[in-house]
Length: 314
Ligand SMILES: [Zn+2]
Image (cartoon, rainbow, N blue to C red; front, side):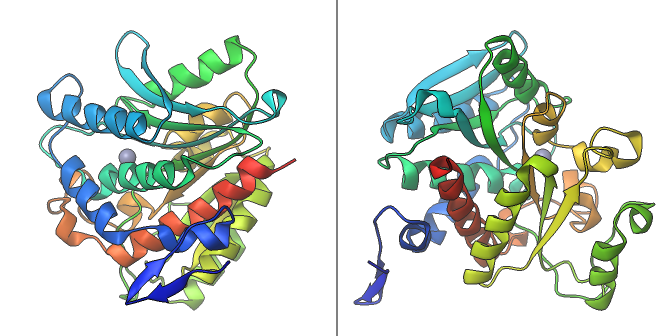
């Protein structure tokens, strides 16, 4: 049954992507961004309060929650077992830590808000794959939390079918030349750079950095993005380029912890410092008021749709 508008409110619910995508609530995303966008350097009170938010929310939604203490930090992991134990995990995730002196609204309060909203909407849904919702610690210290999880998965012979990793999904600009690209990108990705040039280098789209094994996930994300009016630029990273030094800018977030073990993963990003002058509070404060909440909503919807395809995949 499609979503219907009743008395101005969107009635939603069901199990398909099309039925659940309209259930994403912008007000809820805004509230969570405001709660997370506080200074939260590991082992400080702010960090503890955001970790507590991840844990209490996942418990409230009925996930089996683990505080994965890997020695130097703590990942918050929520699990919902799939119907096929051999099918492996689908992980929807983002890092909750940030650097000192910065409230990190875009990086990565937006990612945590999107992750928790997807957790809410998939909480009661039966799926083939096990759904894992993760709030990673110590990303800013060098992807430490996600690496601990990925290393443990290898050690336990855990099958991972897909990893979604948000990192900064709230900053857009329609101004020409508001989007930059890493040096040498025109050589590695000429089609994507030509496409950007044709659109006057406007920073108004979401970037999906996908390894080869994630190509169907990337395609499904772009299709659901189209449905909600979101422009997606997929950067398909061939196996031969996945781990070389020239593509280091494509491994700057937690998806890379999975790539090194050949687990499939996508990074969902507004491209951070290649667009956002407030990245790490360098050119201005990274505050909720600088974000575009329709964009955050659309990105959450497209990811929810792609995640549903992934947890159902055979
Ligand atoms: Zn980040």
